Each structure stands twice: as structure tokens, then as C-alpha cells.
Amino acid sequence: MKRAVTLSALVCLLAVTAAAPASPDAGARPERHHPGTLLDAVPRKGVLKVCTTGDYAPFTKLDPADKTYSGVDIEMARDLAKSLGAKPKFTATTWANLTKDVAARRCDIGVGGVSITLPRARQVYFSEPTREDGKTPIVRCADKERFGAGTLKDIDKAGVRVVVNPGGTNEEFARANIKHATIRLHPENTTIFQEIIDGRADVMMTDASETLYQSKIHPELCALHPGKPFTFSEKAYAMPRGDEEFKEYVDQFVHLAKHDGTYAKYEDQWMR
Image 1 (tube, one colour):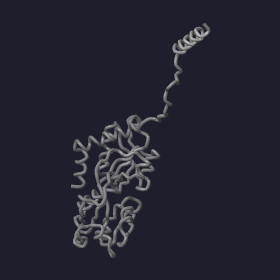
Image 2 (cartoon, rainbow, N blue to C red; image 1 turned 90 degrees about the horizontal axis):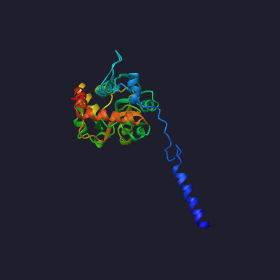
Image 3 (cartoon, helix red, strand yellow; image 1 turned 180 degrees about the vertical axis):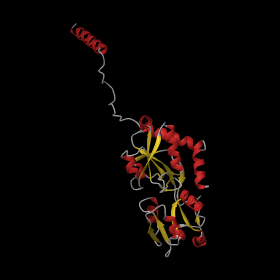
Image 4 (cartoon, rainbow, N blue to C red; image 1 turned 30 degrees about the horizontal axis):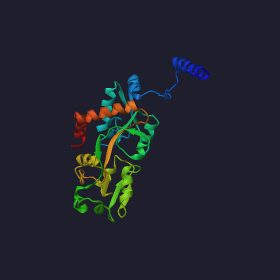
């Protein structure tokens, strides 16, 4: 009898517990703070803040006379801003500071031939890649025979002067691979190829896309095997970490531009 009473009491207790309203926090995931996405903020403000160096044609070029930017990625940035109902505001930066500026949200996006690297990817998100690239040599056309097939063995010889711009992937590549030739630093990207033309340097190893552009505007310069570069890399746009919505939008924007002919049209204007 005592056991029956105990079981009856237990059944009543379970019934009351089941009928009671659940705590609003029961089973709920911790709420994550969301400061807002650029996908909403850019259209609301009407401005897309774009960081770019302005010294890396064909992707970004600053005209010193009227302070206007041009280039493949500049046109893409204008299109991106337009798609968001905004206007681009270009902000000058340097290669040493570009990803830092994006990470600190001094700008909404960083463009201008930015190569994806793992150290950079620790600071920023990268969009879907816009193109493949890689390091390849450019020399005076008169010296093509001197460098044969343009291999590293052909270049890395005593008496050869390799010019590089400091602080980026070009210098990293040269330091890692040049042991016998002389490495010369030249701080100005906009005038570095003139060093080769004027005979103060013999070769530069940079992205194939840049060698194609420079050989187009300087017929005295020849790109060596730009279709088969020494390295593999990809270029993309840098965005602040944590903003998944904005990244997904930029990914989709790049994807469409690569497949509807928009990106190819801009490249053709500069490199063909």
C-alpha cells in the first residue's frame, strides 16, 4: 500500500513538471553579439571605403596629377559600390599596411592585385579569387638571349642585378631564391621598371600579370614565360574578419564578374 501511494505521488509530480512552462533560457544557445554587417551599413551610408596602394598597375594606379585611381580592381570596386547603391571612397595605403587597415576597419575592402597569403589570411577574409598568378622574370628584350630559358639557374648568377620592391612577396621570393646574383632594393613601384630600361638593373621577378602590363607599355621590356610562372598564387579582395554576410556578397559579386565577361573586359583593357 505504501509503495502504491509513493508511485501515485511520483506520477503527480511528473505531470506537474511537464505542464509547467519551460524556462526561456532552457536549451537556448548563447546569444552572439552582432555589431552589424557592411552589407547593410554601406548602402545606408552610401559610401564604400576602399583601401588601395595606387602603385601596382594593371590593378591599381594613382595619377599624381589629378589624384584619381584607375586599374582592373579599381573598376571592379566601382562596380561593387554601385551594386550596393553606394559610391567608392578610395583611401591610400601601403603594402605593409593594407591588411592592417582592413583588419582595423579603416576601410571596408582592400583591392589592387592583393595576393592571398597565409599570414594575410590570419588578419583578413579573402574573397573568391579573381585570377591565378605567379612570379616570373621581366628583362630588357635585348638581353633575352643572355637569360636563356629564364630559369632561376639562368638568373641567379654573379654579375646579374635583380631589382625588387621592398616589403612584399617580390622581395620574399627574391630573398628565398637568389644566392649569387645581386639583389637591389628600389622603394618606388611606379619607377622600378625604369631601372631595368636604363640599365641600372637587369631583371625583376614579379607577378606575371604585372610583367604583361609592363611589356605592353614598355616595348623594350620582355616578360619571360608569363604563362608558366615559378610560383602559384591567387589574387583576391581583402575584407574585415567576422562579417560573413559581406564576404558572401563580395564572393558572389566576384563570381558573377568572372563568368559574365566583366572581369575579363577590364583585364583586356590593361594587359592585352
